[in-house]
Length: 276
Image 1 (cartoon, rainbow, N blue to C red):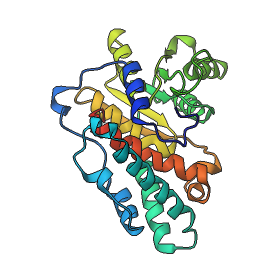
Image 2: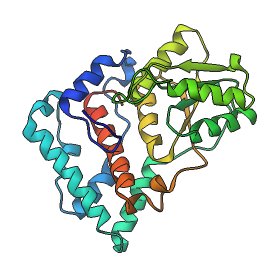
Image 3: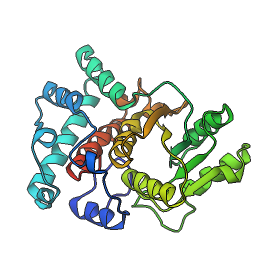
Image 4: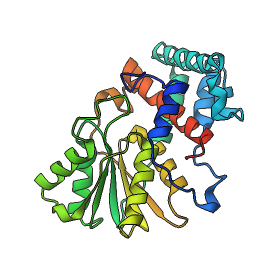
């Protein structure tokens, strides 16, 4: 079992997580559609002469019950992380790393929407951005989502509740805050929140997605998969980010490198699971 966000989950841990997540029917027109492009990570792997089959082979989730395959995937990621950390002065690699980060962090011009959606986190950067957008009139409601990662204590106050308290303290009326406090993963954030909006008949034809730059792509991909056809998604990255995960420094430290690389693992595994 993992103890930090830098570790990859095992097959058995993923099974446990999937059993804890809620369910949501995929819109018919999106059943066979996916929303990630792995060309950037494949190009980076090839530059290090590392295997790319994880991103190109037609795997099924059950294939990873094979320890040999799982260990091979983990070894590939570990080798890639080592390669990145040892390539600080390679200008060609630098361009690839920038392209990779830019792909993950692509965002949209701000525009009005039905609500602002905020993915949970430990720091307040995301809710700060959401409150700013709310005060500027971009949406009449904020939806905060997330309990905590699956490997953390279930009895702590949820990230969503902490975010809601922050928003109220900074001038957002409680009636304009929607709280989803049970989700444990990004796909669970999306599924539980969309289910909640539909259950409560809350208009959500257009949604601003507030996320950290490096994790924006994955959240957007899950929303694209799970939302009704025609839903408009507007990506808004946080204004502040720690040096550990910034565009100019993530590849210079082990934690940043592992977390950013794990975004691609999550994107690919969710595609295999048909949730993004």
